[in-house]
Length: 463
Image (tube, rainbow, N blue to C red; front, side, top):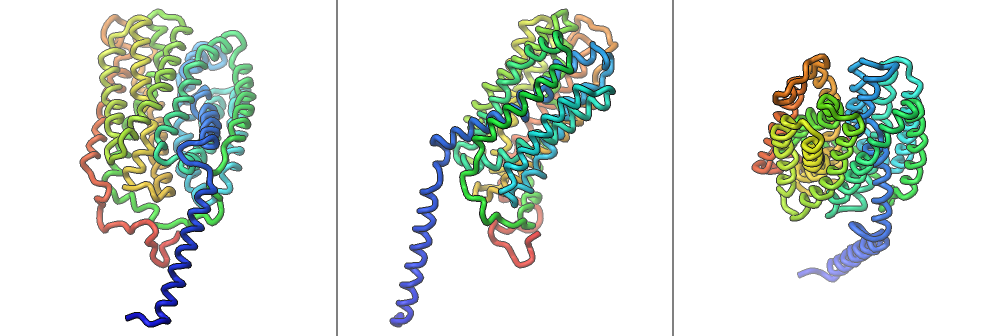
């Protein structure tokens, strides 16, 4: 039997634990609502504006096909094919920078807003530098890597804020902001087309630099932290335990393969349309349709990925966005000869292939096996994003080897000139769908010894 002294100690311990629990509950009740509420939706609106600047409304990832066509046919860069690399370089560098920015912000959360403001300044400097570029190399550097770094510094901290404001609706929230980027990309190509033809690339790029600053400043006003930034966690070697999980490598491989082909239609459909006898304005319309469909498809696929909270919920939209888009490329693009058939392909491809991007947060959660280790989930998301970005950069150089600008246009499949681009895109998308085999791999399966649970940190395991 317990002595009176032991009972007294137990009583004090119980009271202390109760006070701690009550304190935690009190602190939680003081926090703004998660997954809903006025402040969460205002944050999401601000994050959507940041997304527009970093991904959608910028001319490079989603709209660069219009600029590529203009630069290739007008001075001072007429006939220089490698100016097309700037588009995929901006997108690729953006994504490659994400894990580094995320890792820094994970352990320095108070610097997230400062990081975003620095990214804003780089995104303003990029189009201004491109406007005054005199050589193709200067143009590619300004519109490619420089914008990519700035956009990465805008985008990566946003994902950290989303993880605070949204839990169960995280994929839906990410799908929404991605969709807004796609929607702006649907509206802008015709506007860029008009501005380029009437005012030239210099005035168009300077105008965009002004718009970048205004949009970013307004968006950052609503991007705030939900929880206090005090007492951030310390880096640990266990943050990288996921590298021993086969599921991580399966999903990473699928993500890389998908990235090697994803932007081919956005980049080359305007030029393909011109070879089919259509005007450059109608070619720009095709890019708008891709982005419009993406704006619709991304939130829907994000919703589908969270429709039922089970381990494999993201695999159906994954198959749709890879295998489905590959079939569309083989069965529609290769046979398209007029505006209507190309418009149908653009809308279907944008609605399916575009949804892959919103699945990365779900991939990260699935690899971790739970959603309690926010820092590790964000790091995995960043690595998946970076490797996809590297694949996108590589795809820009690969595409130049698959296309002969001097080739003859015929009435055969793929118009002969574009056959290799179409077959390459279709095959890579279908191969990426094999990543769905990850459904049969448990997230607890590892190479070598079992990784320690998060929080079980042995002495000396901090970085």
